[in-house]
Amino acid sequence: MSKKKIKRGLVLTGGGARGAYQVGALIAIAEICKDLNIDNPFQVISGSSAGAINSMFMAANAHRFHDGAKQLKSLWEEMYVNNIYKSNFTSLMKTGFRFILELSLGGLYKKKQARALLDTSPLKGLIEKNINFSNVQKNIDSGILHGVSVTAMNYTTGNSRI
Image 1 (tube, rainbow, N blue to C red):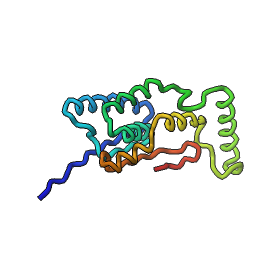
Image 2: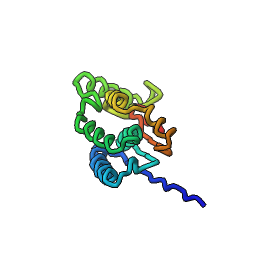
Image 3: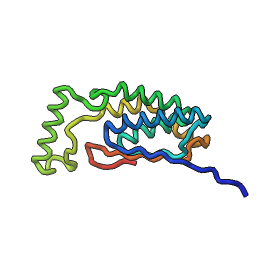
């Protein structure tokens, strides 16, 4: 009778700055795995919100877990407000005005009501620039990963996306 290979999972929660703390844990795990000659300790990776960013980054780098964890640390070290949301006066005034207008008209102005005061479009660019999404599928196809699941909320619509 053949033994089934154990599949380990990694679940990373949301919570903004909590994502930065997760990187420290990932680096520690990567160092231990390097000492034990373990290439990738997790066959299933899941995350929510900030944890989804870390999850997708590590899923894209599962074939090089140790180096991926170090690169993720570098990404978080370069994480500034302007990489996450537009913080200039014009953008803040525009979104603030839209937020007040949509809330004061009770949904008459648009079908969707405002859910956020900030324009997070820079975060989308940061994610697209730093995560090689095609590597995720390659890592699944090669058997390095068994599965990946992430969820995040669209602050404009209030809908979760999986």
